[in-house]
Image (cartoon, rainbow, N blue to C red; front, side, top):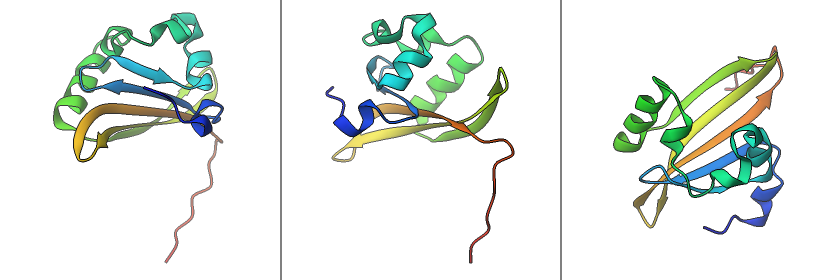
Length: 113
């Protein structure tokens, strides 16, 4: 899978896998984020092998149900928004995209009418 140019240097980690969990592409931020786990060498491996339980089961369920999963985490004092969502080509399920971005803490929240 060719990564669109704008994604390559996008300041959030973007990882794309196919319907079986095989990592198809990672942008520069994702490669740097997962450098300790192999970085770019993870492309072509299975995303499920990179996650311990219960995360592995959750990813399997997301792929089977083609649902979106969104949550925040804190690791080493850094807050992140994790957004995992299915991607499609002409209506056919292709796999999952994970976008992981650093967010400020506390983060402003606005209610708009």
